[in-house]
Length: 239
Image (cartoon, rainbow, N blue to C red; front, side):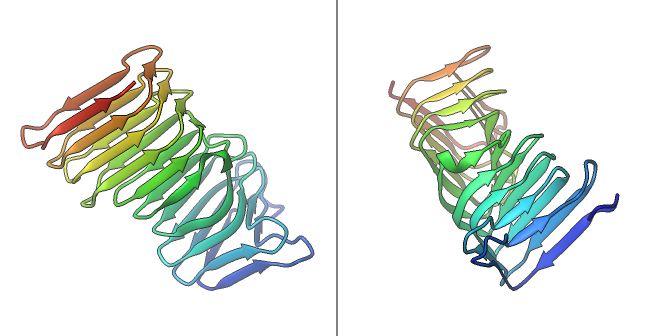
């Protein structure tokens, strides 16, 4: 798209880049444009040699819904990008690259393991309701946010250090309708607090850190139960 309009792509089948180096999905738009890519059930985007999903300097909103999958790299370029796995399968993604701009990677109603070294240029990482996501290795982002805003349990695990470069290392929120929220981390650092946890709901909140937790400007660990109906909040640190 060389004009000023936006791009919109919705897929429910297989899309594959060829052995000659072609990308699976490649969207192009100038600065100020938006590319919206929605992968619904049955969608399987893969690539033999190139990149599974590419977006250039325009902004993008990419949603991988339940029953859809991506295999290969996702590289989103210079715009402000939102990449959401809403029940979708991310086990085959070899790179989550937000590029420059303000970029957010969200996991919702999904589970799996992410090699932290494959997460690049993501200013914010959100693990939302109904998810169980494990990050392996050193994870650097502005803030790792765990938000339980639905009715399911939420679990986030990091086997390496989480470094919050622009806020809390881990910010955990159990909202009014949320059930259990579980955070298990190795070491955590944050420019604000290391770990900030708020339980507004009826579920239990459990946070475990097996290495040092450090907040540069505020708290190492800041934990609050704000509702009289909240279940237990348990904080364990073994450094």
